Figure 1 (cartoon, rainbow, N blue to C red):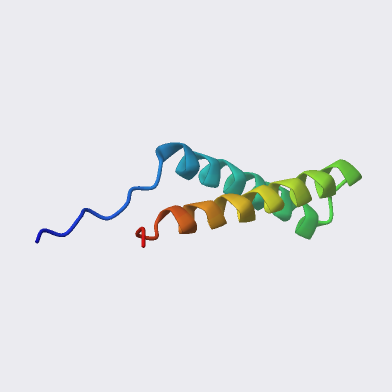
Figure 2 (cartoon, helix red, strand yellow):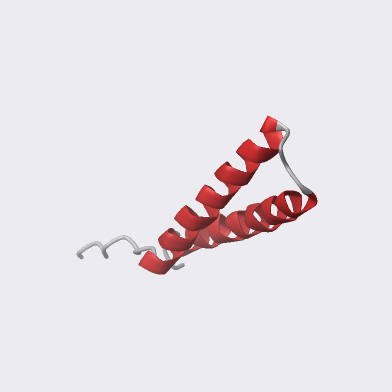
Length: 66
């Protein structure tokens, strides 16, 4: 019996993870620096939510099938 190769994470999901991570980093820096507007808070909240969802999907897609 040969072992099946480990499941691959789609490149698009990794790209989304990178983009949302950059957004969270930039807007979190603005918020912590004290120069955040209401729109920055909204953008940070949305980007953090999408980052969590994307990270969850990446973790789920990495599990082998039962």
